[in-house]
Image 1 (cartoon, each protein chain N blue to C red):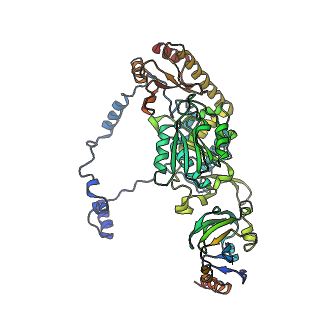
Image 2 (cartoon, rainbow over the protein chains, first blue to last red):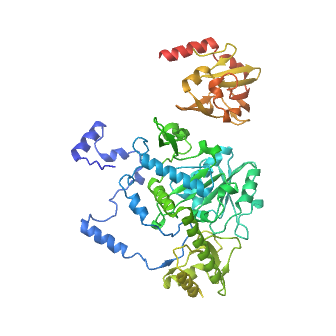
Length: 441
Length: 131
């Protein structure tokens, strides 16, 4: 995208063409009290050397010698260097994703491959070209369930990531939907018999593994949802789990929505990430987002094009399935390169390492007097510890030993001040786990 | 030349109505299906939905475009043609028969008199084409 500068003279002439004298008049619609009256406080301009120095000094404050056990929706996995080299190619490295089939076969092909791999991982029939991130994907899933069922009640487990739930609330606030948040059971799982699913329920939304790391019994929840004619929406914040878990599609999910950050996308302090969205063929016309399909050109050769575009804003205007049509092309490419590099076996191997290391950590920590596992449900690479003193104190104690031990659940679940959410991925070495154990003991 | 059966009533939005008492069957005309081209998907309301005359009750997607279909009369939906889910091409092949879209209970049967006759509709198509 080009930056097009214009001179003061050009600005004056543009303003006079539309009958204005000052640029500020363009903002007359905005109430006075909302306008910024003084300059933005970002300091004086800097020269390039000063700017580099400034950022170096900021960067030197980053603590990179800490061992992190943070998860909760953002996961530290190994990122093969091939990803950066491939996505940096000029054909891909654009701020805007081109979709014209006559000049964008490469982009369309990798998008098609991304969709294919998301379908394989989730066990679903059709996946889109990605959405903003996991939270907005889940919100779109709720809206889609409302369109498919024409019902307006949504049951969402409190173990769906709290920030995802906030985004769902924000998306649905003015749409007349009722969002009922249902509390988890004693085991950490969602109990389908106590959810109160009725004939008004459009969707049951659960996350697996859930915010506590517990793997949900999706089949039982799917049966309960389907019996009432509701859809099952499965949120996935840790898609690496799909390397060892039965895919949600095989458990009866109608929509799988989640995050692909685990697949080669840097943590970057929380974003940008890349949402995944998959569903069943029979619902494809209600699916939001871009969709790339395989086609044949006039000479019978294989090619790729945007397909079923009539769902979308550029054709359907206000009746589109979603009016957020941006996807995360470059991040979807990262995930595509990651999954292609690792392959089926590679993803399974990484997933197994996560599983084993997390279970090793959990079992070693449970041996420490005062610490035990809060929930009995099976888990993947994340689990909740019950701590002998407030989790925030435990976390502070670990920080002194250069360990970021996890997050205190109290922040999201008032009353759970003794809950410490710990994540162990394949990037954590055994001696780092042992160090955590001895620091806690 | 499009087929416009004499025993039906029509709208300027290119729907046809076969009314009997307070019951009516609704679809899109032969002229409309010609204009749209091959229909690939029909989105219909559900039984029990109520609409005012002129409200969109569904949409027809062809290889060229998506078009809304409008309620010719105020009323509630009593039946939808589920077979269009699997065979939307019936709208092209038999617009006045197998390609019907919904059956409705009419709120005010007098509204039927305000619809176009086949001759008025044919004239209207000619006017539209001339514009």
